[in-house]
Image 1 (spheres, helix red, strand yellow):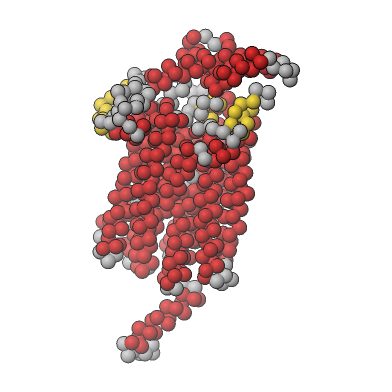
Image 2 (cartoon, helix red, strand yellow; image 1 turned 30 degrees about the vertical axis):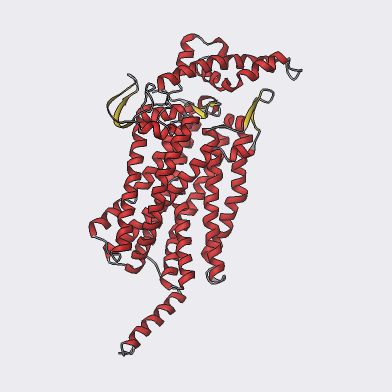
Length: 532
């Protein structure tokens, strides 16, 4: 198979992004869980909660460091592998990333040192404030990154400048409060909370199975189950909101996820399972749930959700309109800074919203104005992402999401109403479930990013035009280098996490003194001296 520059660039970025996201959800969730545990410690002054806080903070710290290291690589890849993308939309995409670095990451990085080394330097309340600032900084980092990504999914608050040949921001407010970005943020953060809750639940269950650190494990399960149940419910509810926003901004992605090849009579049914056939453009052996997709996608029983075939026809019409905009753009460029005639300006403005669709023809012809009918048909069909992986990735993710709700509900019930007594089969299930939220999170990102193809910026800039002009050898060498380096980091991460989990919590001087005082008091109340 012939190696393709764009596909290799996509593969490299997908590998680094998905590897980085192994660390992000645990950082988001564990930072909040640690802050909750320390809050309980400050309120009760019980040493066990201090011990819990320090133990889970240690695992948070390992994950945080490697998350930062892998995240930095992604920032450089925009300029290295996607230089035209960076030039074309850098004014908009770079703004939230800059704010994230200045406001959120510095807040997080500044206070993380005080969180780990300030136990004996700060008051209990002061240290608690620091811990919460680390948690807030982690979540603020996610906010601004997802604002940048949300703009790629739904490019609002910007317009194309025909003189500079770049997208320019027109409203920072619209970029920040983009409905897709806000839905992605709350959904992603909630998924991070679920990930951390399942992690804490699984590790604590392992301690109970081994008969170690029982007090810490039971209390950790209580916190994880309570926090995780709320988060798991939020993921489902907020995921539904993401589906609703996709109806307005990414109709093709929604149709592909559903395997909806043709527009159905409203309200559309939801395909529970089936086998999408991209060549035949139909879904075999589909099992439908009536009206559910219409309710999810339109919040009504009367509005239609367009199917893939109808969306391809719409894309073809927009490509033809985009060619008119492209023709006007080339004439404006030919003026070389001279005043633009009003008629030419009006022609461009009337069709500029579809300029990105004309760029889809660049894959087949240098000048979109020279495109044949066959090439226009090919370009319009390119707007359909491969359906079957999206279809199944989404359903596996949703199934895991409901599984998390059931698991958290069960452990919450046992922790709250059964005196924290957990059957061994349930504990084993909790241990085996530890990888599940990462699988769900990675599938979620796959659906979001793969479903956007063939666009880097939806409707604005095709992926095929975004890549840098690198050689295949450059990409293969750097891809191999990243894979080797990241594999080493993964081994380091897993080794450190397993080491400290096996080692378990430790008691510092304050905890030891408090435990000794409590133990002595119990012995005295039984009329037994420590010597006896």
